[in-house]
Image (cartoon, rainbow, N blue to C red; front, side, top):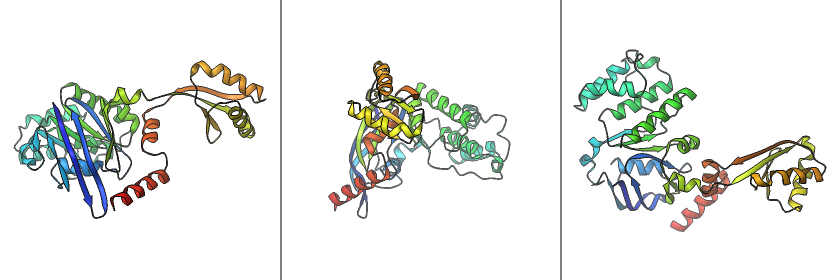
Length: 315
């Protein structure tokens, strides 16, 4: 069963189209990545699904219920949007107990969620002493209080140190294995790649990919990064390789050659033939970030041109 289904979902703010006839199905159970460049409509989509704003056109369902009646599914959805807000003078435990009373939830859930997010032992300290990362964990705990079927998290690893990021990553995986659906919106594509089972990519309100993470990762290619021993030789090396039929791009003093591991020796010989000694030759695989940039635009200029073209079409 799909936990979220949208059909021609559209939202306009004046002349700007935040969502443009978005049609997508989000599968149940597992961790779903929702990604896209800034201004692509991710936050608008989340707010529509939560009933915070209304669409301009189209429709959608969440957990089988229409978004026109969010009260029908609100109790089954846990949410963390942006930075969580708590009463600074109260402890983490007291904040969660207050939320549990307010939402008429069993107090046993407080201990359960504190353990899930790794705040046991710090739960009686006032929240004002918490780091940003600890507040983020507390926000996830609050989202889990109702034991939701669907969890929507916006930048859940924001402010966390490397150890905290690993903890949250494992937490998200565990929640997905339990049979929950966790929708994660994040700009940290390495974390999305590491934790998500399914990926949804939108660009300027339009769907450009929806499917298993394994499917999008099939688009990865091997490449070889090389660098000349002397930076002054970089230009000459690039010219020689291009003349020899190699596909080369440059980033600073590193040349990226579109070739697999089986061509590494040939590439080394080509550099030697050009009279250049290499200080670096590394075979690597594209990651999600590379694929994402190819699909959405590599630089702000490309994104701005794309947005301008989209707005002109709408106008």
